[in-house]
Image (cartoon, rainbow, N blue to C red; front, top):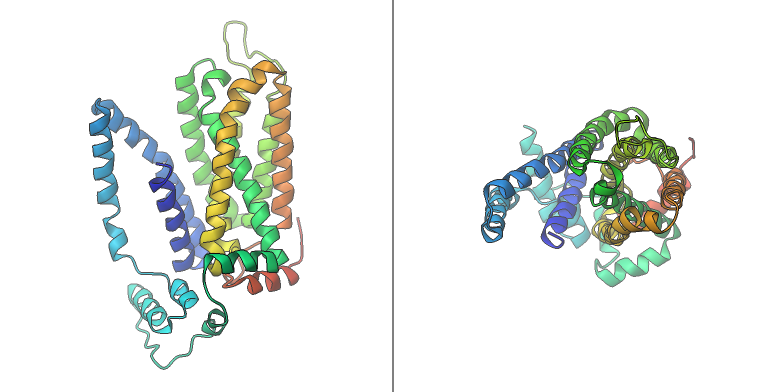
Length: 339
């Protein structure tokens, strides 16, 4: 899963961001996240009916093969060809996309404006690293995105591996969390459409911080129940965390320029994996050797720092997708910050 699943997920979001217009990306992202959440019951069903783990992996492999047949027929991104300096293939991709929309384009004698930027550079890993250091705006945005992914990975997997110590019944915890994820993925779409990527992320990070703080007091919700304020607050908090996870996939794809989109996704996802290792320790171990205010208060502070980081980033819903680091610098210079 660590290699195959996340490679597929990263490629899927990159391709979606480069093939779809900005006004449709939010809806496609929300739909993909809902499918992510609905995939858990399918995986559980496979595990329930297939007891032998060898056949379980075989069943999963068959499902993955069937679901990925469509990839072989998907149109390649014109932006990918632009970065390679292949104008002919880029034009063919644009014509194929236009045909899907019922429009016919003949671009044989048309000059692609962005091709000039791509021809001035060589697309390679080391060139991406050099440009990352050469463009402070690109380095700043990439660093902030890495921090956001780190925190979200820590919180998301901390919850998923910690419900047994958070709620009195771990099965109800996982059920409540799965419902919360669906609520988050569905509600994040209209929220982002209404107030934008940047404001939505700031709001959801602040919401997560508030419920982390609410979870600190030792308050039982009844004399004859083991449910506490922490249990309910965390079940509500996971809605905000899942909403942020949905939003950060969309935002990362739009903030990163085409020249660095795969690079930024990879380093950000790697940061999330590091956070996912720390999350279960914080939720399952740290609060038992210290007061639970330490991990919960620390997570609240980190969530507020993520909100601050989101404030520093720019709104992308009304912007053209950047092609190179130079476009990122120009985008930041012309941006006016508003809450």
